[in-house]
Image (cartoon, rainbow, N blue to C red; front, side, top):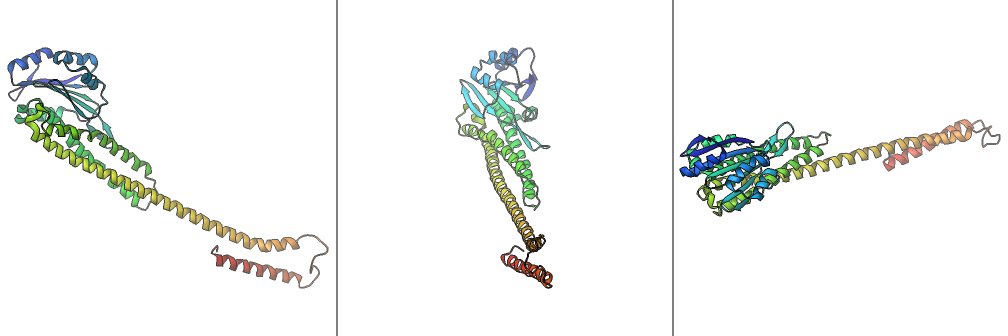
Length: 330
């Protein structure tokens, strides 16, 4: 659907009267004016009105309606088609939602097509309308404001990720036994999704800054500032990704050490249990032999047979005990 539409002439917003075709005709007739139409997840039928008036390239229109494109810049005759991937940080779940903004840019028009809930452009429109310099820059000024707003959002999200990363590091090295593997991997996946969204935007801005996009020639300095901010964000994202990799490795090492310690303790416990069982088995064996009801057994009717048997049991137990102590089992 159409979210907002207006004509901008001499730094003043004018409401579009009549249909969209009349708006474009009026803007062209008056000279230094441009039309900005903002749409949110339009259908093919809704977009056909604009396509027919501006003769937009079918491939670009298809990309704008279907979305799911990487950030890119394409030229179709006198029209510039730019795809930007805004991000939305969900604080409750620490998830990053990726949206898409498609911008059609001409000498006298800007068409923005937004998909998803990330980076609504009403803030950008208010900024452009309150800044005479941006309005004077025309459609290129709008594209700059959109890019600047999205990169600022990137920067804010990097700080949120940094806070999540610090919290995870505290969990990993706090000495507790909580398994943070799933949370570390989840945050690492969000960082990689962040990188997938913002990395392709760098060459787009570099094209503009190097003067290869005539429509944006007068705003190269502004785009250079946006590119500097984006490169700083890119560096922070790389650092976060490396720290998450290190945190995951350290966590797995700590978990492995704890498991080894637990296994060693179990082995020690089993050795002690086996040792005590061996101590008990020796007198049990002797007592078991003399407990058998046979008539002819050694020293069966000897007066000292009973104390001798007990003595043998004690001596045998002492010998076994000392051997087990010497071997470290007790």
